[in-house]
Each structure stands twice: as C-alpha cells, then as structure tokens.
Image 1 (tube, protein in one colour):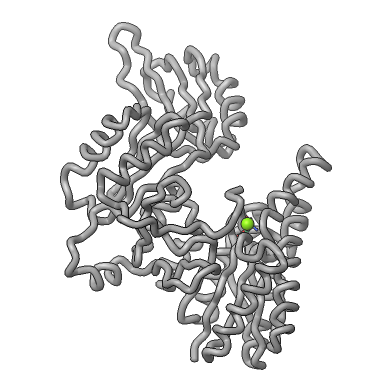
Image 2: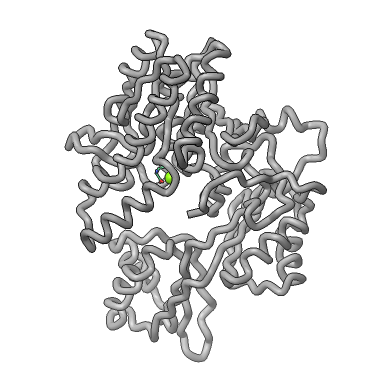
Length: 426
Ligand code: ASP
Ligand code: MG
C-alpha cells in the first residue's frame, strides 16, 4: 500500500459534474488500498477569468495581489472536491499550498519551489483521510507572501509533493489519454506514446506541446519520479514518463522509433534587426539590452554579412507577450548599434520533431525538410539540439507542417485513437 499523488487539471473539474466524477475516481483509488494525495487546478478557465478581472480593474496589477487573486481559483476547487468526497462517505481535507508546506522563493508569478514540508498532509494520510492540495501555489520563505508557480504550475506542485512524500507514482490527469505523437487537436491521426523519456518530454514541452509543465518534468527527472499522464474521462492506460533506459528495455525488440513526436507552438513572435554593422560587440549589445528587458530569447539566426555593405541581419524569436518590451528596448539602441531598422512579425509558429533516436540516424533533417517542401511550407528559421529539429514557419502553415512531418515519419495510426474529452483550449 503506497502513496499515489493524483493531479487533476482545470478541464477535469470544469463544473459540479466534473468535480463529482473526479471525486469518484479518487475514492476508487483509495478503495484499492492506496493513500491518496490529490492536487487540483482551478475549475475550467477560472484562472484566465481572474486575470481578465484583474486587468479590468487595473492596467498593471501588483504582482503580490495578482498572486493572491489567482490562488483563489484553486481554493475553490479543493474545497468543493473535498465536499464531493465527503458525500461519497470518505474523509477528505483540503490544504492551501502554504498549509501543505510548499515553500518557494519570492518571485511572484513564477516562483520556484525550494522545499516541501508536507507535515499536515502526512498527518491527514495517517488518520485515513484523503489529502487535497491546491495546485500552483506556495508561500515565500523570505516574505511569507503567497506566490504562484506560473501558468500550468499545478503539475509541478504534484511532482514536488510526490517526491517529498516518496510516492510510488505521480498521476497527471487531463482531458486527453496521454502524450501523443502530435497535438490531436490538429493531427487527427496522432498516436498515444506508451512510454517516453524525461528528456524527450522536456523537449516536447519546451517546444510548445501542451502536455506537462516544463518544471514538473525537470523535477521528476532530477528525483526519478515516474509520471503517468492520463485522462480523467476514461480508464485507459496513459503515457508513462520515465528514465530513458526504462523506455528502451521495453521496446528493445521493436524497431526503435526514431522520431517520438511533433510539437508545435503558436505563441512566439519573430524580431529582425536589419542592417547591423558586422563588427565586434554588436550582438552582445543587442542581446544585452534584451536580457535587461527580461526577454526569453529562443531561436537566433545571424546572416552572413553582405560583402558590399558589411551589414548583416539578426533574427530571433521570443514569446509573443514579450514582443513589445523587446522592441522598445531595441529601439533605444538604434544610435549606438547603428542598425537600419527593426521588423516585428507575430504571425509565426514553430514546428519541431523530437526523438532520442535521431542522434544516431542520418538523414532525419533532410526527410523533415523534404516533407515541408512537398507540402509547400517555407522555412524561415532553423535550430537543432541532439534530439530535436525545429523550424519557424508562417503561422497559417503550422498545421500543414505538423501534418506533413507526422506523415513523413510514419507516426500516424490507422484508426483515429485520440479523443479530446474536454477543455476549451484556452
Ligand atoms: N490554474 C492554473 C492555470 O490555469 C494552474 C494550473 O492549471 O496548473 O495556469
Ligand atoms: Mg488551468
């Protein structure tokens, strides 16, 4: 009889009916003899609605108060979930992140967990109760203020608690049956991946696949906590995220899949600094200013300078939400750096192929690019890692690019496997 941590996302508890369905599922796990700790997200689109509300009240809400507001979403779901479990004849106790011992740094809106001291959760378990913890929140060690871990952070709460409690597994429930070879919303032939390594999952998540919070996967990898990603709407076995060696042992007899999946991201923008003098220190000045503006730069391409002019163009991508601040920071540099002009393009998207097998398989990039070419998709930028190739394309061609790559690497299943059970995709 071990400890199981179960995390339910907002779409699983979108309304009263969802809350009751999830309560039944938790009780079933408990009846199987497990000690159950539940981490829950805010109901449906509550977090987005609270952000909208804050923006209606104030153009620039103070970060401390915004965190206080947003954590209310998870408080609602944890309390109603506990009520629903009581109605099924079992004891459940809800805890805020702070009560559950989730200690963070003081960075509002993107706090990092630095310690988990779940004494009250352990007490509840020892007394036979089901513990329910509000996801995505903690308390700062220094300021004692309430913090949030960043959008989607409940996954990280769940893994951190699972590690602290030495749970057997961290189950993450959402509205799809696991991790797929592509987003089933745009690739109907997407296939469920039975097992995937932490490293591949990190690449997929970092490249925009909305599967798991990035930090939750890093945390799980560091402490080797297996994650089972599955749907709260079905009983199907989902996807196990485990160490690379544990993926290989099971599939050693099958022809190794070179590409595990295709990820896409529509949340980026591209900035081009046109006509940068090709001399020492220019890139340092440009990216120094962007760093000061807290921009998270992703792909960078610098062209070879034209011999006649000695000028070059530097393009990079970054999250769209940071685009305007970055443009302002760069505009201030025009006189010192002496570039020609800036170009801003937010109708771009990124498509990536990810697979641990690609480092030892030649020709992968060529096959990917040929598929894009056959589909009439123009590549604007390219970047690679050991286990990934990414391209930036026009946003309008993202879906075609995903479909083309998916087909080129034979990732599709013959039947339609993927069911999207809920969620508004917001
Ligand atoms: N409710 C928060 C959000 O929507 C946290 C989470 O869902 O994990 O981002
Ligand atoms: Mg949510």
